[in-house]
Structure formats: C-alpha cells, structure tokens
Image 1 (cartoon, rainbow, N blue to C red):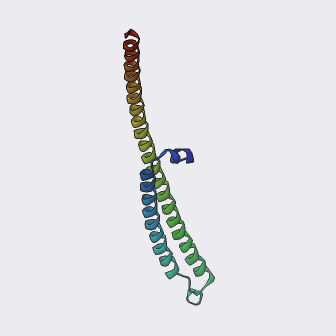
Image 2: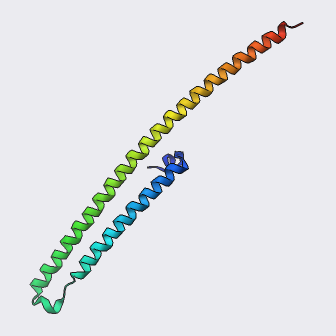
Image 3: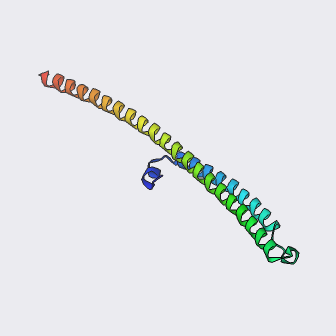
Length: 128
C-alpha cells in the first residue's frame, strides 16, 4: 500500500491496520523465537560428533531446517501482505462510494438552494 493510499484512510482504519499488523508481528515473532530455541537446542556438540562427516551432516540438517523455517516465515508475510492489500482496497472502494454519494447529495442540495434563491429574487423583483 502506498503512502498516498494510507493518507486517504481514516484514522480508525489506520489504527485497525496497525493493531492487526502488531498482532501478526507478535505472533510471528513468538513463532520465530520458538523455532530459534529449537535450533539452539540442537546445537552441534563437536565432541560427540565423532567425525567431520557426522558434523557436516548435522550442520547441513540444521541449515535445511532453518531454511524451511525462513521459507514458512516469508510465505506468512506474503500472505499477510496480500490480505492487507485486499482489505485496504476494499476500504478504499467503500470510502470512494461514500464520498461519491456525499458529493451527489451536496450537489442536489446546492441545486435546490439555487432554485430557492432564484425564486426569492423573482419574488423580490416583482414587489413594488
């Protein structure tokens, strides 16, 4: 979402977006912390490895798991971004509809006022 689009949103909509982003961020941070703890708990103990080949296999396994976690995290971020963009587009569309309706109503009211003014002027000019 661009800055221009964000500036068009109401304060409440912006706050709702912020709350949702914060909740998602907290949830994902908790997930990252939990996965980080799991990775740290599987640290390679070189003394127990027995051989360089076993150590390399263990390290490779850790990197594969870390890569899977990172891919899942990025997929979650992409999904959240798409959801946010859809929600923002929907809010923008609703806002445009309301603005157009308000503009049409204002134009109708102006037309009525113009007609009333014209009738008043005619009545005023007809007076002796």
